[in-house]
Every structure is written in C-alpha cells, then in structure tokens.
Amino acid sequence: MSEISERRWGSLPSGEAISLFTLRNASGVEASVTNYGGRLVTLQVPDRAGRSEDIVLGFDSLDGYLDPNPYFGALVGRFANRIANGKFQLDGKTYTLLQNNGSNALHGGARGFDKVAWRAAVINSNGNSVLELRYLSKDGEEGYPGNLEVAATYTLSEDNMLRIDYSASTDRDTVLNLTNHSYFNLAGHAQGNILDQHVILNADRFTPVAPNLIPTGDLRGVAGTPFDFRQATAIGARIDANDEQITFGTGYDHNFVLNRSGNGLSLAARVHDPHSGRIMEVLTTQPGMQFYTGNHIRGPIPGKSGATYGARAGFCCETQHFPDSPNQPQFPSSVLKPGERYRQTTAFRFSAGGE
View 1: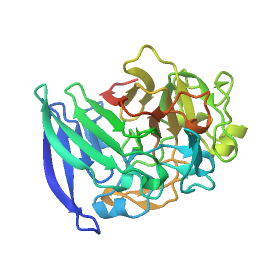
View 2 (view 1 turned 180 degrees about the horizontal axis):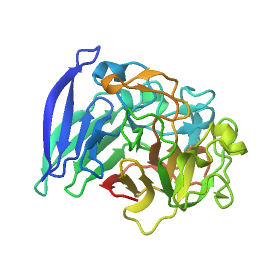
View 3 (view 1 turned 90 degrees about the horizontal axis):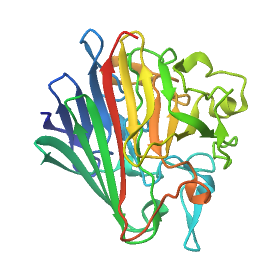
View 4 (view 1 turned 90 degrees about the vertical axis):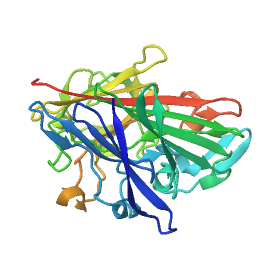
C-alpha cells in the first residue's frame, strides 16, 4: 500500500502556501508532486542493482519553478502544445490567445495550468492513498471560453506505476488538451544527455510539421524515416539526420499517432537505459504523444543537487490530442461541451532489467 506525506514547500509571491506531496510504495519508488502547477518534482526509481536515482529534471525548491523554465514536470493546460497564430474558431466565434511561441500559442499561455496553485487533498481510494489536485479555470482565462473544473489524480501502485487520471467539465463549449511535461533521464537526472537510451514508440505514423512546428495536417508513415521507432532504437541514432522534419524540430519534437487497441490504457512508448537497466513504459488513453528530446533547453540551467541541464538532457513523452487540433477538423476533436466529461489517463510503469 502506498503512502503519501505532505510538507510545506514555500509560498507564492501572493502569499499562498504551496506544499510538496511525496508518494511512496514498498518497492522503493517515490514520486514528489507539488500543487504549484501539478509538477512532478522528483521520481526515485531503482536500477537493476536496486539503487534508486531521481530520473526527472527539475529544481530543489519552489523558487526554481517560479522562474522561467522549460515546463519541468508540469501539468500543462488548457491546451498542451501549439495552436497556430494563437487563434481558433468555435461555434462561429474566433478566440484569440497569447502568441508565446513565435506566432503560436503554446501550453496554455502566459499563466497556464503549470503556473497556478491547485487545491490539494490526500484521499483514500480502495485502500490506497492518492493525491487529488483541483483547479477552476474561469471563463476567459488566457482567452479560452467556459468555466472549466479540472481534476488530476496521482496514484502510485505497488507494481511501480505512477498513474495520472485527468477529468474536467465545462459550462460552455471549449477546447481542452492536458498533459504532463516531465523530462526523463532514466540514467538519472544529473547524468548528462539521453542519446544512448533506447526507445520503442507504438506508432506507424506521425504528424509532420511546417517550419513553425504546426502540423501540416498530413499523417505520414514512419517507415524509412528517422521517425521509425517501432523497433528499439537509440534516441541519438538519427537525431541529427539530414531530414527536413529533423531540421524543423532541431531533433525530435513531433506528435506520433499512436496505434490504439480499445478505449483503455494502451502502450505508447517503452524506453530502456542500457547502463542502469531502468525501463519506463508509457500507457495512455490518448490518441497522440509528443516525443520531445529537449532540443531547446537553453542551458546550462542549474538544477537539483548541483546538476546543470542543457540540450537533450531529458526526453518528454507528452500524451495528448494532436497539436493545433482546434484548427484541423480532420484530427481527433479536442472540443468539450457542457454535460460532457473529459477523461484521460496516462501511466508511467517502471522496471529494471539487463537488456
């Protein structure tokens, strides 16, 4: 049975108190989450010899997350990823968002869900302690319509799975795309780049992008391209290939169209670090996943325990609806209407082996 402890973790400039919650199981896995931005701050996972290491990039204190940073550990919303020109139409009305990524709107705007204090509660669910975070995003916040009630529940199981269950409801038609933006390095957060870690992505297709990283609308097969991770391949094997899409992303920063099986959790990715033996499987109910290799980390960023982070110090597996889907009706819809319930689950399952 997992346990959750809470400690005071500082205050926002407004004076609002922030906490850090640590989830522990009997197998030695620990996950620390703050109610500031729903951020995953630490994730201690044993290697093949039973030695635990923190495998997510981040900061030792709240102050690091208050300063500009590349969304370390963040719960991202209202709309994860990019919306072209910071505009979308819904019910015949055009909504204008902050352009905070060139001409694009990115990750919810200037004060997205990663930069707010969530209401936190530790609750008992089937004999297991879980952390529940809630937030009311008011109508018009960052330009999005509708009063949106959002919940994110973090559960750590005895079989070493960290599960995040998201739900939301709205009083007006709106668009919604939630994800977790943790940067993983399975060798340990301070162990340099992630180029020799091996990835399998359960995707036959990806969504190619224009130079501004907005999808063109096509679904392109991965066969014969640097985007074919259907067999285990080192992240660094083709990350600098002479390929237009690689050039646009400065590496991998692309949405993969997941091969789904049913409506429940389905395997999206499997990552293995050959040095430590750590294995991470990503399972989700979402149609897509942004595989991002930290190309734009503008280091050196001072991180936890004296570490510094630079480009490609971590990778992200951002399960999601496709980027710019409010403007691309051929993509799975991200519209949420009154009376409907948004639900999605993403889980990270850990093990270790000698592959």
